Length: 284
Image (cartoon, rainbow, N blue to C red):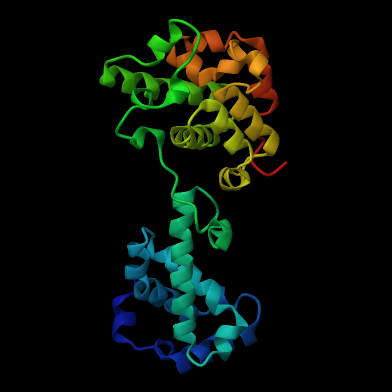
């Protein structure tokens, strides 16, 4: 809601810090419902949306998201007691905008994005954003079981890229068909593929991801579900299962030509994915 023409012509007292302090104190003293019913409070929020619009857009947000951050700050007693209330609110809005932008990049909540332990993470990358197909250079897609190695690394780069993207999309569909939230399936598999691209092998990628507690926090899925996704996508790391369907994982099985229908006929695979489907996230 934009400020009305009358509001633009009329100067409220809250434009300066002392006037804002007086208004916030009055709203606080008025008790429950004051923010909802007071017309000057509504004008204040429209003013905040306009004041922080440029800051919000800089971080890819709507002006009203910045106004919401300002509202949360205004309700804090420390703002009323501050030497310059508007300066404190501006600082709070800037931090919230940064956290919102960081949370969107990391695929996590704003609360987590504010924590310093997440500051070293780079933004999530979609598997499809990479220019070079993994089969051109990554040993994780090389196998030691006969002709499958040749099938996993076709000489035609365009065909390889198409095959990889198709395999990833089919893997996402596979999880979604078996009761996993589509967004969780996509972000989880794309995160696995991103880390796989940085690892020397599927086995090392599995071990690194298994110990990657930050990944679980960012993706917000239970530990049991995360481990099942790793085993299903990358294959069980047990050496005795290396040449079995369970050891290869669905990503490699799809890459070497096995159809999605074939995966859906694998009862053991279906049982593991269905039984470990997350019910809505968490760290169980």
